[in-house]
Image (tube, rainbow, N blue to C red; front, side, top):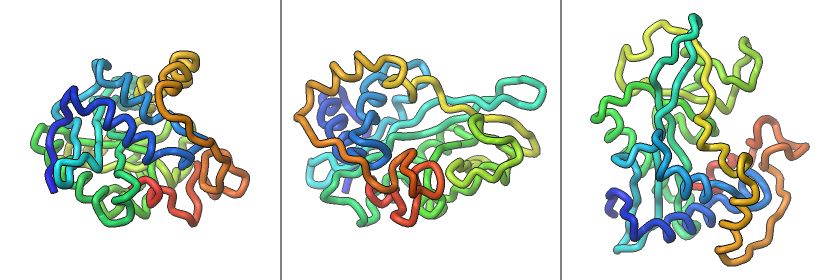
Length: 225
């Protein structure tokens, strides 16, 4: 198993991998591959943490990181970071490769001086990589009531003391919403891939039987990793 930086020659293969990994997981179809496609030229993109995992020269996993910000109580913008999409090839899911890739990436991020990460995900998976509920660090999620315990919003301090006793509110970087902002461009991009059936399934965002934000007892992350 080998983990290395993504190269331009990998772009299409990695985008297809991302599409396969996320298809029908959080919504009918997916947009994560388009987010990745557009993010590589985004100023928040961190090329040193654009990583692929290989098995016998075949790319089986990928993760990317982004700069982010937290709005402190006094309105100051405090530097932070996030990551995703993180993808594992369907043939390698539920075998621990996603956790190995993430742990490697977190180690590299810490070496680079990245002190704090926030992300949206299932605590039952990400706790194994050191994440906890962000509310325990007094980091609020922009789309939820300030005093709520948001079960899908997670954080981890990679450098002890980086966050300290601050309090603030996090909003994902705008680059993650590119498919919503430019739906026609996304549809044109999506049309360059083989056609796949879009399905409405339990565990997806907005599904009426969900417990919260698309996660239920299916542990949606297992379908990605």
